[in-house]
Image (tube, rainbow, N blue to C red; front, side, top):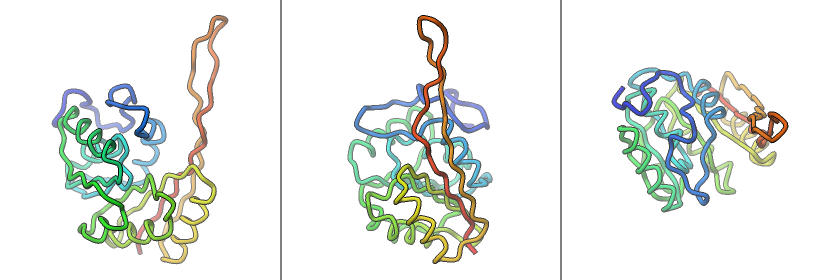
Length: 197
């Protein structure tokens, strides 16, 4: 691997290794590790990260595949933070500022797509993302909102994807308090994955 900051093959880089800001979201390490496992990546695969945020998934895609990776976000701060984290980890991706609806049709087909944000236009973004997946490729959609999950499942069904898997994950992390250690739960995340027929 091209970096000494994280020279392991396992996904789930600790969140504290990434540069972060309060304004830009990050997919937490445990969720990221599960989402990446659902992509079934191989060396040389190409991938797209829709709604790259801090770039944590983009960085991991680069490290896992060493192939061509594209990252999209409409937020200038997210794009800058993703570029900063790519540089920090010694990897490169094509980072594009713009709405997924405008950018996705211009990108080539890839082996894997992760959708981390749809900005309220879930159906169209997922349709466009599926269009970018090669036959036999995988798509993973991370959702927090029930409405997003519903629309994602309906779109996947409509587009007749195969090997649908829906996994809801609730992570609790330990925190030291004066009398011992307590577990603090994070928001549940639903990870939807499927294969393009």
